[in-house]
Length: 584
Image (cartoon, rainbow, N blue to C red; front, side, top):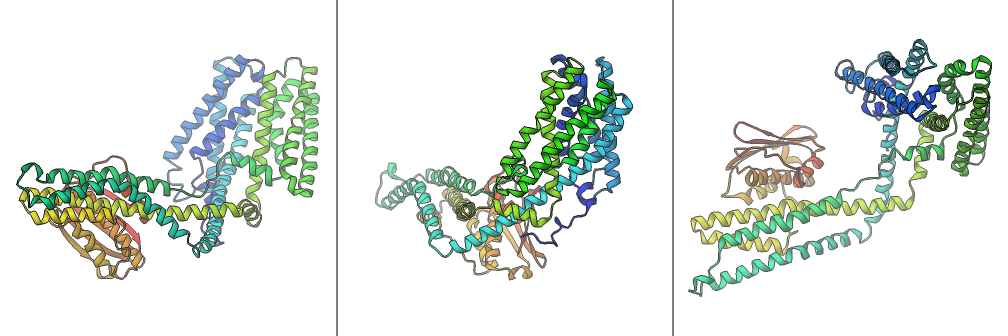
């Protein structure tokens, strides 16, 4: 579980507001959508007809494009290194204010070009949008940062629960049963290939007693069969198992935010009132005059605030019915739109068409969820974790634990098939091809028997390494005679535990296989050295063709998983260099 010393939970306001999320593309998209609704809802002339709606929408999109260009410039200059060095809050506030100014100027210019009547003057528009942006931008950045914290805390709580469940499951026969099921699947897939190789061996046994040239073993055909088994049977099976293991905890979807708000958060009448006043005060004054405009504004607000306060009291009194009360109140709040619509039409006929009603309803819903949603992130961590724990049901934890264990077993089997079985089969095929050229009968027979033994017991690889030297040499010996290998192991690295030995051996195996099979390398060097007390580096340098590109496969996925994506494959003047950093 995350604790108070965790760097994510102890972040300062500057890190939250001026860091990763400041002027990010995610906040840009959210702001753009809300900005368009705010423009349509705030302009009295924007909803008088479909043509007006489309015209103002075009103006709004131009304003959004202006914001996008400004963001690109700022992200390439002032905000370029914000992830590493968060900017001061005042810089972010000023930048957001400048963005609000850009939006205002572009919108005003667009309205002028299209000759659209507007009830908001240039000065008023600039002041309002600058103030909105200076509040909204930093607040949204703070919200996004806290959302990231919420996701990690939720993952930590789930992990804690799953580990407890796994400890209980390990006392039973579940793991053995899962492994038996996977072994049966592997056996079923590889049986046809093994039968074909048995036929070749029988033909080989009778070869010494037959003079018929038609009964001679076609060794190239045998090599092709072994290679085809590796590529067409083992490889797809290992990929299928790996993909089945790629299961993670359920992610937090954006569309789950409204649900969580309705389940746990109250209404925020003060924040709602401030936004409503800033957004509608000027248009109402221009259209209806001071007395009627104020009556419309504060009459609707009074009813809205009353409903919210009553709903908050009921949700506090009856927490089990929180969501129901929230939804009913949300529906009741829309009555203010129709109340205002009645008086607007009474005082200025034609001022409240259907498009105005729709934009007001949508804008009202967005403001409610935005204000209530932000409140969720300002609460104490105790309340936050309490609500998260309530979401983590026992049956979900058990299902996740089962899934995680199955994924672990499947991933282990996949890696053995991909690394040991596939690599060893292809090695046998290459030995047969080479021995067939040189006429080395003993090597031909030995390679064929080795391939058959691999298919008979595909998971017979020793899972316990005696030492790092033995484990690595076991991988190197597979390619004996096919490639010249120079091995150098730092004595300081030999003290790693058994599990780390197996991982390092598989990394070496992947490097060898790729260099020889894909890079056509004839010589390579393997260096394993300890770079500090907790990290070991594996470096494989070959004289092959270098990286060939293409889609990343299971080997790349394994390297990324075991190293935490701390690996690289780069071309050199004479071949390629694979470097993997492992915790060991």
